[in-house]
Image 1 (tube, rainbow, N blue to C red):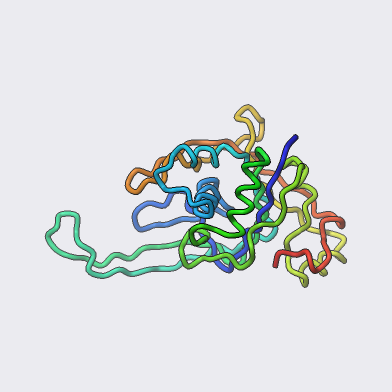
Image 2: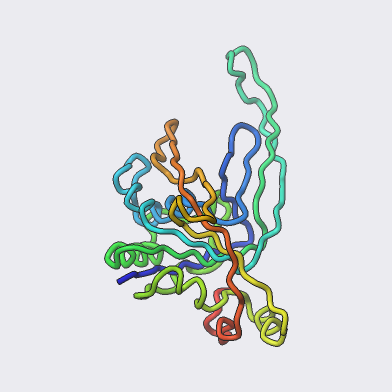
Length: 235
């Protein structure tokens, strides 16, 4: 029987880097697998160089439902007196850093119940601080939503929308409701399969390595039954 853990990823600012190198730090438009695995590893107290436990987390099937698309923003950061690579002086470095503002995601992890139950406990009482891509981007709400004996594919179509009360009330009376974008792990031979190079193999300092997965990018309709009572909303 499939079991799925539902998490609420909600914060004023989030950054999910995919190809961050040098002075340009990008963000994906939804949480990456490396970002979610890193988040769960921090909650569980898994060390960066514990490749075996990181691989176990990365083996869980990941699905993301975009309950609110964020705005892509960019800021500049200036660092002075940075030593040159030749060691002959110092320089000023200007970097571009991208982040998502006002985004809201339902993140689903599918796997063995005992593993997911341990993760649910970990995010409720994390061993190390949790943040979404940068230390300043902390969660706005508790992450844990539910752990159920339901498949990921079923939960992504049926789980209550996480949107806040005003937008949910507006959508409840709208006959032309939006559809919610989804990004879900899928087999490589799925006709919809797209590659993502974000499976963590090692988080060790100076030796970070990533592998590839395939995902299906799709949409699910926002139905009336997914618009919940006010008290059950995430934000």
